[in-house]
Length: 485
Length: 99
Image (cartoon, rainbow over all chains, first blue to last red; front, top):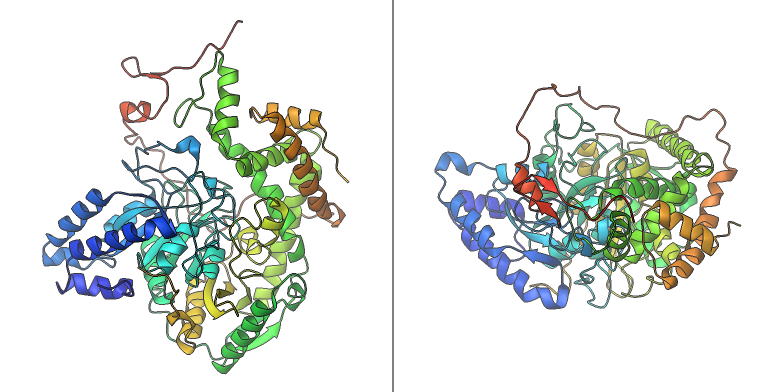
């Protein structure tokens, strides 16, 4: 199978024995090996394990060949735990951590016949928008190797865009699936909070984190979402509601669908290329019969500060577990107190320490009401804005990122500048809503530009249907980067 | 504007159990002040009577049965520790009490 094959094509070929899972896996591993120096999408690859798994699948009798991802190579962001295979979360502190258990999504992928080929580069503990905060070096963008693929799930997006694998999983706390999908020209979906189990996802901010798919088409993303979604007794936040058939939802018909545009968010700091693509995307949706209207999200401008107050507070609590005692690297010291401080001080990178410090501050006595509780109250106002908007429209449309991929090194010295680029993505996390990014054009420099569609809670079917209809109507999804393998 | 002096950074670093270098303390003092100044926009919002959102699980299912189930094997867990006495089934750490 070629690097351009879709997950569904691979699955059908393996199921009908026109291809073997081993052959597909070997080709993917060869592409990954050839790409790893220039692209650096993967942090670790376990070729023997992947090939053994593929061979086992090839030996299954016909009854075992109905699985929805039979023989499909899948990459995992390196913050998703895999039993017996290293899981680092991009941190030096977990450089040699080998989880004793699988994440729920990993078990579901195995049940679906997928072949996990390796773990992709991400910002440390998923804190970043460029993969430059990975302890193991940044991934690169296949559209321009001197630029970021975005982050934090940048390795997953780069791997899919470059044709190394048809599917990957990422995690999205403030845009970490959608922004790299936009910057690499692929599809990235952040599901509704509570749709996909986070059991085995290394926690960053627990009221915001979601795992979701990256793919080269909406149809492939729908197949992967179907596999990973659903109630899990090991994650009490997951919904027990029955799941719709996401592939059946892709009818191509969106006539009468109401799409809201928060124009008041588009006035500052958005590149002209991005605005032009967005305007054309709205025209395409209109051509398809959608009704495009303006909506107001009056508190959305506050989303970045609210996000950083809440996410850092939760992170400072979640990351308290990395003390050198039960897992991870430990610094030598004479007393246990010194051991904690030195392990954390030397094990964490600068961005993680910065966020732990901020989170500790906003939770500390005397400041908690003014910062943390206040941010939670404004979060309620942001949710109400969406409730009101989604009463009158089915989807809210925005650009995914205010710019196309930026050069590596451009923003690392200015954390605030890096944070501000999340302006269009963080609101969906704060409100717990599903959001998708699909490719909606190329900049003058031939860099991808993403269109984001945000829907009602647990209405991924409508989000996917609109994104698929848009994708079919335009040629953008067929654009491939100059660097593929 | 929020100011952050060296003492504030040292107090926070102690609370967070982070041993920082001299350079990190200076850099974080400057960066945290800038980030907090930016975050202070939320202070101006009227939130009278607005309940805080701390969790979003409106559709969360019923709690699972409180039934015993196998957990991870002790040895598999201890193998991940930098200090462990696996025969005794213990994590080991440097001295906790005394000087």
